[in-house]
Length: 360
Image (tube, rainbow, N blue to C red):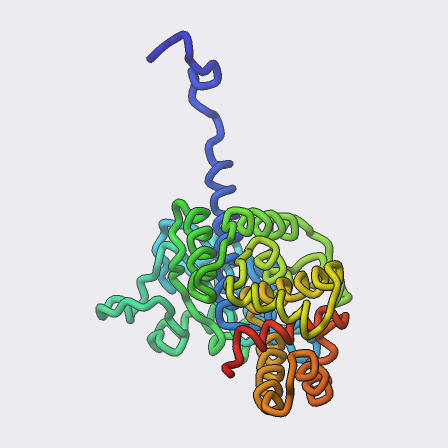
């Protein structure tokens, strides 16, 4: 070793080495939560994801407080293989077992009836009776456990109120996110998702990753309780809308050159717009183009479908794009009309669907 470059702090062993392990375990939870959001986004699902809200990761199925249900997830980054025995074990150091703690989070609460799933997620895997028979599952539902294992779990939580449906909701998951290098894996999944949904986009996966993981960490550190649902969504959760907005901000793709040229021609000739007016509509066109590419919300697809159907139905009776737009707008449903905040936004979206998705 070159002693001239020796680290003064490295000449004696550290007294405390558990800090980095603890950080990695918490950091793993955040990245697993990130992956779950990407999965939900790919499916086009509405969601709100909470970190450290009754459980490690809590996922709401809707932003509508009257409609939402919850999925609770306890996430463990560990090399330990879990059995029903050590999941239900108590000790002086741990007077409540892992299963007890899960049940206490879920049972006899005002939100109990809204919980649809309770997942125990562990990188160390499981050794249940079904595994001993040679089966390997990513997800083991409680119904796959043996009668003996079921009895141990139900006996373990018998003293807790309102546990009647807890066992049926319980599942054990081996995550597909590795316990090492998970930050790079998440960045890769962002790239894979965008490439899969809309090939050809230019995007910055590192910036998307940094924005979301920073927000997850900030909201995970927020220990306040919020009795107002909208305030909780704003200060403790990341929603599908927020994820979509971040993705939209960090992707770009120029429209096909032929479409761009035709757009300029139509705005100049059919609409007779000056340069400033053309620029406003072109910007609206680009915003809608990006939103269509990145956004998985059903509302976006509904707006697109409504525009395309009406353009196809009316196009034969029109002599210009401007004439077609005027007739289409009178036939659209109310939700589509409310989606647009300005006439430029509507014209940009109309022209995008007309040029990109309608065959003449």
